[in-house]
Length: 497
Ligand code: ADP
Image 1 (tube, protein in one colour):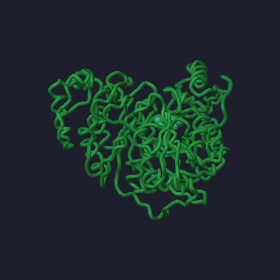
Image 2 (spheres, helix red, strand yellow):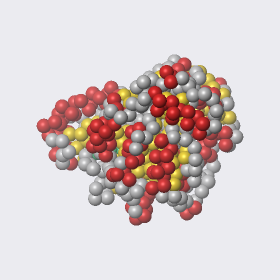
Image 3 (tube, rainbow, N blue to C red):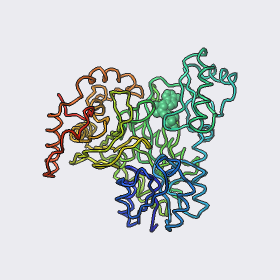
Image 4 (cartoon, rainbow, N blue to C red):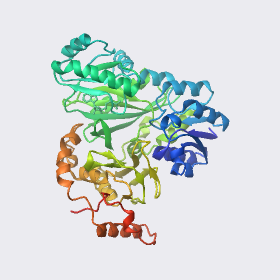
């Protein structure tokens, strides 16, 4: 087993990895940028190293600096978390060449799956159904027109090197194609440094379902069931749950088989996720593979009782997967809300500032993975995710009502958060009844804005009463902070209903 791991990330996922290292008695070293000098991951790690300026390219993306640091401090392995360098095959190759273990798949698997067209070709060769469309980049508008009329409108143009919900354009008819094609190419060049794009049939009301898999270096492949991730805004997930309330036992059998085949096709090891779209007729199509730990992995941990991050570390050190497939069963239901520093009422604009209060909910079936505490600074430099609030219940309704309780008792002041928005979704009748697909938030957002715009701003008195009760709840009998610490525009709320 490793003695020391360098965590090449920040925020909640860095803390999550530190926790796994602690449990495995491995020294957790972290990197940090100038902007993160006082960040929680720096304070909780066993060792912390400043590696550069606040911009990600000066620090968390600085491949050579990270690798030379790992060598200097005698780290056996690097855990990349998600985002940053986690799916950068060039980085992984350099780590491999430096004789350090990368906690994740091989550079080769990442290269194969990171290019969406090569992944689609590979899946087709291995009888994995893909969203209908092209499997090679399209270079001319003439080719684009031909492919689009073969596939049938509406179609979606996508960046071959895309990710993070960026670089996608829906085209409804041929008259829009040329302009969209040129825009998609230049957007892709800007965002991903390459302009190759491909085309997929645009599925009108699908659900996003994904399967968590784990593979080791001994030829063992396991799945940890599926997650439902259809609640997205601009193709970015906000709320996830496991298992999917739309999947029957028969469907589960089908999609887990697809996922394991996909993983085998690229000779995968470590944890990974096969993303699928489920069409209205319940056909499943491979969308892409994420070759790293996912943001939403805690819902799977809750329902399977498997610690995915510890499993990643053990596998990377050469151990076999610690469980047999038959030993796993779905233990209940879990829901995750991604808590972002953003203003849902102002076009989800990022909110920056210093956290003046951070008081988290407690109780049976409540987990919070966070990278912040009181006085943490939320800066412009990084993703605005503050924490992940996750609940578990014996069934979906228990997980949902627990989530609502947890959201009501989660206090974050100093920045605006999407907690009120998450609460609204948790109570939406269509969410309760599982009547939603990937367009739900896009369709419903206007309703939310109309309902909430005038009612969310709290009076100072209400702010005071919630702060006091929240502090008492945690039995920290300290006096309530002065009210002028709470920005007037802050919209964390008590419930009005
Ligand atoms: P990224 O890698 O940027 O996350 P994905 O290919 O995983 O992009 O797609 C992200 C989301 O975009 C999906 O979850 C889905 O909501 C939507 N999407 C992607 N492809 C299609 C498609 N062909 N039809 C309809 N929606 C799609």
